Image 1 (cartoon, rainbow, N blue to C red):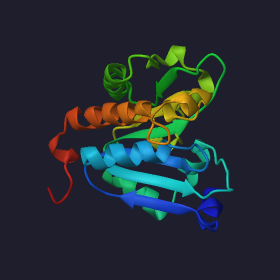
Image 2 (cartoon, rainbow, N blue to C red; image 1 turned 60 degrees about the vertical axis):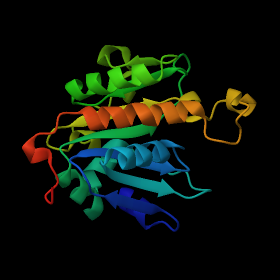
Image 3 (cartoon, rainbow, N blue to C red; image 1 turned 90 degrees about the horizontal axis):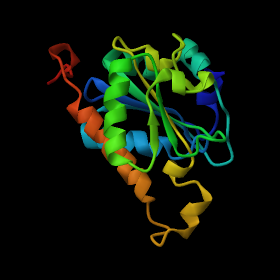
Image 4 (cartoon, helix red, strand yellow; image 1 turned 45 degrees about the vertical axis):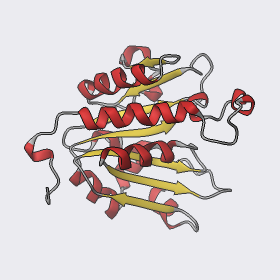
Length: 208
């Protein structure tokens, strides 16, 4: 299904290769809204690489992450071959977790690193980086999930509507229609996590 999604009118695939630290948002655009904004801005500010798929207005086609990883695309394969580790940004909504950021994925060292920076940037939210505290379907540990395909694995970050500025209280913020401050804090935390992640010699871009 992923190849059919990429061929759909209006769908945009983005691949920007920079450092060996990567961000992904392959459920971006109109599907899991604001995830591509978070991933692309954190990547730009930190000099990280980016892979994103943006669905246009009127389209909400959810391809499961495991199917995305099995099929991939030439651009996704270039991205995954280039990066050493990745943070895949997703959106979710679940009762009882509206202020919880879930830090799943197979690289648990990176998960702890990202989690610490998110707690510093977003003290009003719960940042769950213990897999046992994350609902099983949202843990992102399947081997076919794209977040686990780079050589160093990665982190699946699940964002509730509130931190993405999509909750009802967003309408009452005096700064409307400017960017929701929580989104800015989230981007800042991810930027700090990416720039402070130890870079080994084999992590450096080929032209560094």
